[in-house]
Image (cartoon, rainbow, N blue to C red):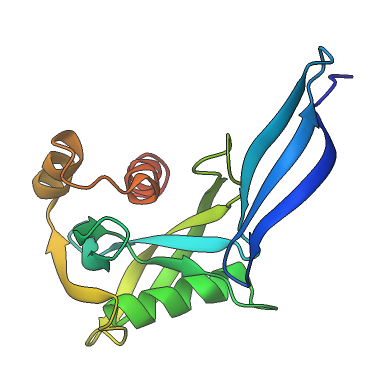
Length: 178
């Protein structure tokens, strides 16, 4: 059995219902002690959804990202509420951020975007649009746009989005959904 690093003690720097920051004292399998291993904990898991239309275009949202100070092309994503099923969360996030109702929702994978410092988990889905209306969450989402295959492949190739969750989800959907 593989030995894993062991937490010896934990110091809480910050805790909230959204994010927590700790410094842990950790013993590595070699016996070496790391005095301050920083860990970011997310109490809620998240979902992300790649939405296709009948032409296999993908719907992107132009997300207002305070953390990076500009708009970013992304797919709909967000946290799972307490006692919410992951499929329900995916459908809700799609509706709030794009105005879309979905069908053929398919689970693709779960990922940990930064497992060296965080325990965040994002469940990735793909689906087809059934109907489309206006964006509900206009504080977060500036606009939406259907990207044709050559457009979204160019967006990925030229690093036109730096959102790792979106990039991985799209690549998974192209390989395992279409």
